Length: 235
Ligand code: CA
Image 1: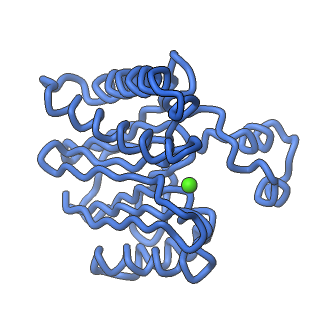
Image 2 (image 1 turned 60 degrees about the horizontal axis):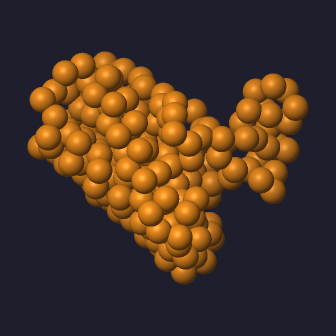
């Protein structure tokens, strides 16, 4: 698949803790959004994606879903080990949303609150569920949609790579149709731009580089409060 991508620090944050991976030869694409003090978030997101790339470069491919789950476990262990080896890196972690393409099949592996979407026809289908505390409260009926959107701790994650030794990864398989697009992005996009606006751009702008640029510019125009990373895949 062809990949168009962009990453931007945004207009408020001093550094970019997002990272992305685009390896068409491996059919492997991913975004990661790191967290941790003293720029450890940058280390965590970059290290996670570098580890993921190396894992798939060395792998003799088996079942794609199982390969992704094993890769995420390997990456998790590497981040925990690095965090334990250097004081400034203690407590670092990262989201990771990855997809493995074996056309016409796609597998998505996900932990955290970055997202994958399928752009099909004139609509946008979210393929991942945010692993956030507020989403859990929302699902339990303890918060309304509006309260969740405004909650001061809405970014608090309940799952991330590097958070604990046992990693729970969501794995999903999708059969791709001709003209499908797949979007991977960090929350710097989704916290600023509504799904309706995202859908308008992704279904309305034919050129993928232009679509990615328009999404980023929209997030910046709405404040650019966080790092923004966007990958758009199409056949
Ligand atoms: Ca972020």
